[in-house]
Image (cartoon, rainbow, N blue to C red; front, top):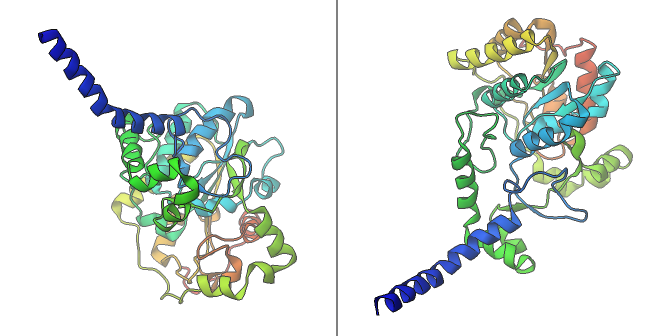
Length: 349
């Protein structure tokens, strides 16, 4: 009788656990955030027009690990999503012919994130011959968002993030009913997950080998028929009021320590490095005291400030949206920086 009771208890327990097991199995099989299965050289499939939001910092590290054994990268572009449109093909015109470049960026990148990535490359014995850092003014005050699936750092580059906490964060995000419903019935739930911000139609073309995204169609339109891209609706959507300039100082003692640590690694590794402070749509320029400190830490000839450019800072036609410079504008900034030309500004020291 006791055996019968035990069997019945086990059976009921298994039945009760079936929904949980099904939810876990769906997560492991579908891997909605691309953090469970090993990276195999691509994120999007041909024809993808929608994707659940992705942690690009994680993709960057996994892409580097996958391709570096054959590509032997030695040159890196660091920064937030703003750095993604500084195209490798344009940067290579300023590098030695044998340079092997790679985008080592992350969404909403921080100084902590850049420092951790530099330490990671150093620990792996990876040469850093050429480095370009796109350091927008806002980066000087950002702190890591390691409780957010979009921005949590990869555990292999950030010792403060454990693998357990990392995967628990993504699994908890997956448990939203809208996401599970989307995975089961995408045709019925697409608009819902878009409206809730769980997914995006911003699916760019990608060169996975160098971890570079691009908007091929948008770039073609901007080059040949800009009015077809910068429609009145587009301009109205992204036009912002101009902000007071320049920004108040942001470099305090902890931030200065981070900047010095970044500079120390770059110098110790013998990197030929350049730092671009890009224009900010809305014309929010870096403070003169912050610029002065950056020049003291990294070297005056290596810091190139374009945040004071009134034309690029106030004209939406230089941007894909309300913040990301179009690739051609990024190419012009690199041309200027590597030819040692910094735009004049009344706010410079």
